[in-house]
Each structure stands twice: as structure tokens, then as C-alpha cells.
Image (cartoon, rainbow, N blue to C red; front, side, top):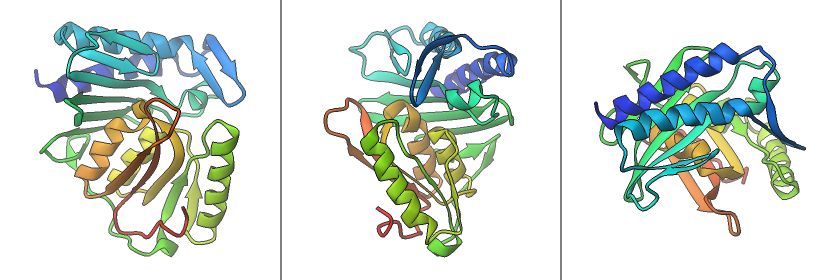
Length: 249
């Protein structure tokens, strides 16, 4: 089984678990002002870990719910077991499983699975970006006035302020704005040509690792800048590579 096939299998199995639990009464492990952690997040990551490291026992795993495996390995699986946990908790069917593989610092595999809609995005380094087995491309829109943009606002005061200011500027220029609650799905939607750009001042690596390879392979552009003082947190500007986003930043 290839790494891409393995990641897809893990994402689909985790998706089944998440879908089965949707609409129930999830156990909350931690609740903060702008976020929620569910027991299901950990259960999903444990399932993914068992599948990935069961097949690749020498690999490392770096996930939102913690580390596993050989952390000295140059092969590192990057996992968000439920990207969009708050959506899930509130019964909003917009969330996904995101799995990427980084080898010697380079993302070489990406899988994003939406268990509610039944959509699975897959990409391997050097191969096409796919949605349910069919090749996809970013949109051809090059006029900001015709674009749909996703602007995230983060979770702390500085990130919220930056996001709201950008949302305001973008609202005056774009056709429509979206704030959907799942960075990984936002990037998958860019790769599919559904939306044209995604901007956020601070986002975690596990939210965007699979999406970065997906967008770039589908013809788009992703610019990342490390956020000082926050390990593996990034400022991101992702787009179809055609619309001008500089005036919004």
C-alpha cells in the first residue's frame, strides 16, 4: 500500500467514526472562550495513529492531540483528526479529517476527507490533485471583484483584530466573504475552484499541511510565514494564484 493509499484509508476510517457520532451528545474535554476539545478528537486521532503507525511503525506522528511514534524519524505524519470541532459540536456539518506526510521537511502526501458530504481530496507529490478520484484545478478568476474569499480570525485578541480588519477590507472588494470554521476544507475548496482565497494571521500546521500541497498541485499559491513565539504556527495567504490579495493584507 502506498503512503497516499494508507493516508486515505486512515482518513476514511476516522470519517466513519466521526459521522457515526454526529448529532449526539459529545463529551467535552476542554472548553475555552474560542475553542472546544472533544473526547472524539482524541479518539479519532488514536484511530488514525493505529492505522498509520501500524503500517509504518518507524514513522513519527504529529497531531493536534499529541505526538506518537519515533520522533527522530524523517517521516512525519501531520494530523488534524477533526478540523472544525466547534462546527461538529454545534451540529454544523462542515468539518473534516486532514492528514499529511512530511518527509525530510517536505510535504509529499495530503488527504482531506469530509465525512458528511462524502468528499475526499487526495494528492501525492508529483501526481494530480484529486477530488473523489477526479483531477481538480483552482479557479481561473483573476478579478478580485468576482472572487469569494475566506478570512479566518484566529483565537486570540491580536489575531481576531487582524482578521476582522482584513475581513472588512476584503468585504469592500470581493463578491462574497466566507468564514467557515475549517481551514483544511477552505484550502480544499480553493483547490477545487469553489473559492479563490484564504487568509489567516495565525493557524496551526496540522490545519494546513495537507491543504498546502493540494492547492499548489492544483495550480494555486500558498505563502506561509512563521509566527514568532508560536511553534509550528503560521500566517497564511492561499489563493488560486491569480487574484490580487496584497491590498487586503
